[in-house]
Length: 230
Figure 1: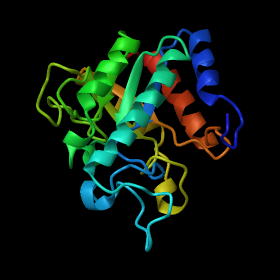
Figure 2: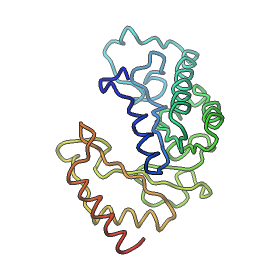
Figure 3: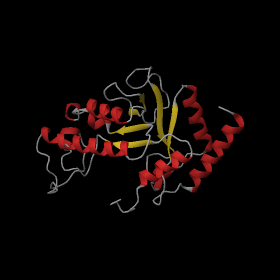
């Protein structure tokens, strides 16, 4: 509510999902944090952990590995709020596995998963293509050929997450190229043929709406799948 929108956007999403009988999944950025004063620096986790500053901001307080405990506590407080304020949560998509793997011992991810499962026993956990082999399913990026997953475990249900654009957000120039109905339909059927779910990012516009080209594509693909089956 203190963000510029001055609205509880997660609450609105939860209500919309409940009204339509949809399971609520939440994205959580775990292995990267550009604002928390105790998140480890790039020297520890790699070049994308935090922005590179010529001079460290005065509010940045991390000095040693033990300071990461403050960040872990912050994550657990956020997850507790998300999992106790909005009714049933069907799943959590964790993100940042590349930086997490640089120093996994700093994050106590086993405790984080235990917290999620204690607060919401039915909540599924994914951390891209797997972090500690205790995820409920894998969700690798962009790889449309599942083949057992990047960690080689075919037992966990696969989900392929990719985008309708070259990248994830609302871009301009070459990165803004939109995938059309033929390409999206092919992606859906390719995922289904491997027993995988397709998680398709839309990269909404700045006001939260879909780009008209993407909206038309999704409606066309939906019509094709209804008419021709899958």
